[in-house]
Every structure is written in structure tokens, then in C-alpha cells.
Amino acid sequence: MEQDAQLVQQCLQGDGSAWEELVRRHTRRIFNICYRFTGNRTEAEDLSQDVFLRVYRTLGTYRSAHGGFATWMTSVTRNLLIDHYRRTKRDRVTDSLDDKMPLVENKESVGRRPDEQALLSELSGQVQSALTRLSPELREAVILRDLQQLEYGEIQHVLAVPEGTVKSRINRGRIELARILQQMGVRPA
Amino acid sequence: MTWTCEQTEARLSDYLDGLLQPTEQTAFDLHVNSCARCTPLVASVSHVLGTLHKLEQLEPSPRLVDSILTITQGPQTWRNAKRWLRSLQSPRFVYSAVSVAATLVVLLTAAGFNWRKPKLADLAPATIYRNANSQVHLVYARSTKFVSDLRVVYEIQSRINENDQNPAIREQTIPQTSPKKDPGRTDNSNPSSPKQQNRANEIGRNLEVLACEFPVLTGSLAERRMP
Image (cartoon, rainbow over all chains, first blue to last red; front, side, top):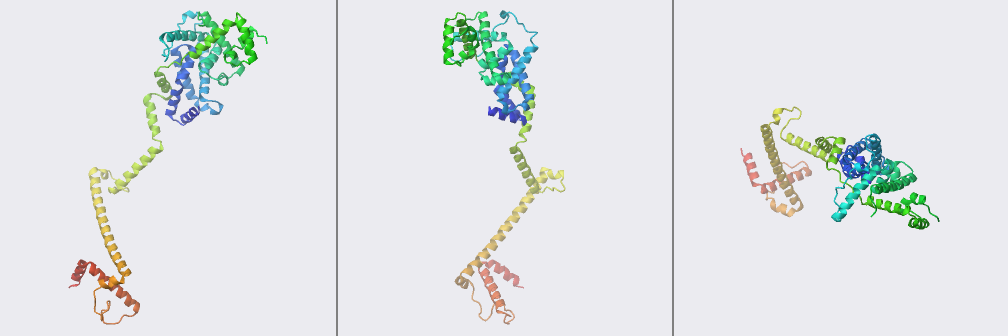
């Protein structure tokens, strides 16, 4: 966290390698947030680029006293994702879950049997599909809490809403996700 | 404590995160175990949560980092050029450049380069070589002469000191002269004062010491005196 703040300072002094280091440290995390929100790899990569472009342009407005750089960056990501959601709302197909092919995780897990891995990959794809069916408010809350493992305080900071609202959204998001999966025919083992 | 289905739904995340009070937890468990609506709800949400936690981070395309750097800082070649230019501002580079410049100035000066009236011809390799060669020979000759002078002076000085400290050796080294003739007396007259006489005696003794030590010098002096 302190290292991020130090890298930001170096960036502001014109050190290109410090920016490169920041990009390398956060690309994976930002890409995953974007991917979980959109469910589309290409869109997630485009959005990740937009996030970093905005961060690069507004780096001077970051104040380490107001929170960690990762949290600040997550706020920027969240705002861009909401903007993207509103912009593409008209173009999106919102019905029929069957139209969406579940996305399969491409990363092999160490220590899992092939059949377990296949089952988890299938389930992951179904969960990802269900995630994209959630409303953006509930989706972002679930992604930040259950996929990015952020604390309630950090989520409150990112979403700029009271802690009670954060808890309520996470709770509703989880229940809604379970209902969508039930509709898709996914039953708890 | 009585527990309702609405409470179960509202506090489900607290239950899953282990944030319920013991009494709430007991009431929750009692209700869920006996409620046909809440049991599958809790099971399905627990299952979803478990799956979410098992989901692994995806690896982005290897090109993504480069794409981000390109849209923020320009193409790779431009980034490299900027990094190189930035490295020129480092203190280490500045110190090195100043050292090299100072060395060049010293070398050119030693090679006879005229800084007041610089000419391009002075920088020709043949000119630099010729000037450097003559400068080196000049410096070498001066150094040799200086060392040789130092050696003579040192010899003289050490001999004088030795004689001053040990009068017995001085007496032995001084050749016996005519008692009637004092050194410095050429006109058969007495010196004007004892002080002058003492100085004359001292010079005479030193010359004699020198004559003993450097017979060649004495010979050349004798030759010079001969008409």
C-alpha cells in the first residue's frame, strides 16, 4: 500500500518505470473486476484500458490520506463500469439465459482432479452468467465482497454509500444470485 | 426469541459471515431447521457463496499490459527513448559526464591545444600526437633536471649537517692547511672583524669538504682557474 503511494509519487515526478510497475501490479485485479461485471473478456480488456487511462490522467487527484491506491483505483473502475452499463443498456440482450454461453475458466487449478476441475469450470461459468443477470448495484457489491474480498469499509468507500446499504446490497445480491442459479437449474450439491 | 422468514432473509449474510449474536444464532438455527421455505434458501445461498469463493482470478491477455502502457505513455520505442533521456538526468550520469569532460580538457591542454585561439587543425590526430610528444619530452627533461638538482642539493645539505653535528669528522675530512694563511685572506692583511673572519673560515671549510667529496667538480674548477 505504501509502495503504491510511493510509486504514484514517482509517476507524478515523471518516472515512466514507476507507472509501468503500477500497471503490472494492478492489471490482473482490475481485469477480473471488469470481467466479472461484464462477463466478456474483450469488453473487460477494453474497460481495463479505459480504467488505466483515466487513472493515468487523474493521478494527480489521488490523495493517500483518503485511502489506499487500490481502493481509489477500484472506485474509478466501478464508476467506469456503471457508465459502461448505462451506455450499453440499450444494446444488451436482457432476456433468455439460454442465449448466453457459460464462460469457462481457462486457468488450470493445481491440486484438483480433472473431473473436479471440469465441474468447477462449469459451475464458474454458470455463476458468471448469473452474475451478469444481477442489477449493477447488487452485482458490484457481490463482486467486491465475495470475489475481491474487500472489507465492508472499503466497499463503502468505493461505492460511496453507507455501510448499512453495503450490507443490504451484498445480502440481496447473494440471495438474488442463488435464485437465478436455481432458475438455471443449478442445485446445491 | 422468535424468528421469522423475513428476518432470515434480512440477516442471511450476517449468519454466513458469522456476525450473529449467540441468541440470534440459536433462534436462526431453530427457525431454519423447521422452515420449509428458509432451509433451501440458506442452502442455495451458502452454495453460491462457496462457489464465489472458489472462483479463481483469470489471467488477462499478455498483450493487455503493453496495450495499457501504449495508450498511456505511447509506443514501446517512445517509452524507451523517454526512459533513456530520463536516465541522463541521474546524478551518476552527470558526474560521469563532468569527469569525462574534465579529462578531455586536461588531455587537450597537455597536448598543446590553444583554448584562447582554437583551431580545427589543432584537433588533427597528427598535430595532437606531435604536440603531445614534444610536451612529454619537455616534461620528462624538466623532471629529470629537477630530480638531479634535488639530489645535489640534498647531498650538499646532508654533508654540511653531518659536519656540523660531528666536529671530529669535520677535522679529519678537512685537509691540513698552512697555519699562517687563513682562508679568505688573499692580501696578507688581517680581517676587519672577528665575525667576518669566522664566516670566511666556515665557507673555507665547507669548500674543502666539497672538494673532498666531489673531486671531479674540483678538477673542473681547477681547470677553469687555469688560464
